[in-house]
Image (cartoon, rainbow, N blue to C red):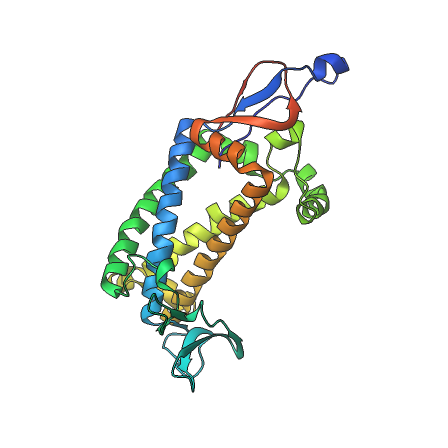
Length: 298
């Protein structure tokens, strides 16, 4: 996640000057952004795996102050069938969906099904251990909070936020076109590829200003040690069980963001984008510059 900074060819130049033969490469991501990005990525995946391990200890979500076991808003369960095997089911409100083999019940190396909300390959540290899952989760939560705070400070100090992430009037007018382009899997070329489109801006802002802060706040609010300090917040959010549900809603929102991010990465050219996040240098698709490398602001 870095700023894109490249100057478009001046309108007064001739076509030959505007589109020379030299490939257009820009320095897209500065070192601090690259380091913060990869630390965030590691922390996120460890927190996701350990969070799922914690969820497995009680795979039900409720709304309110107390657990209403008869009316969960979400749960992943497994029932033993006539064949003696577990069969997984996911319930959202009053609607139930068969998720056998993935959620609720999954088969191990011995071919026997076991009751696990999320399969062992998706949880950290692997075995179903609430204590270890909590230790991993809390450790990396602090790392993510510190690293995320540094990233936010950098975005404001480097003017990345106002210059690259804040949507403009032009962005809002182009929102329908941007939505259509994403549906049709059309990606920008040339100068347009050096800037964030409006959907990218909105997605990054939602993560930085809503989902990640929401994860931190609800995570703290769930801690009994914070009752005296954040008791008012727990009450405002509807109770302790509501806070836990909101925590997982934010987590699943981040999972959706990462999934879409990776899919778009593969479609748009994984090698080029991953290289830019490792080295900083990005080759502009379908574009040519003036023969000189432009330096990014991020």
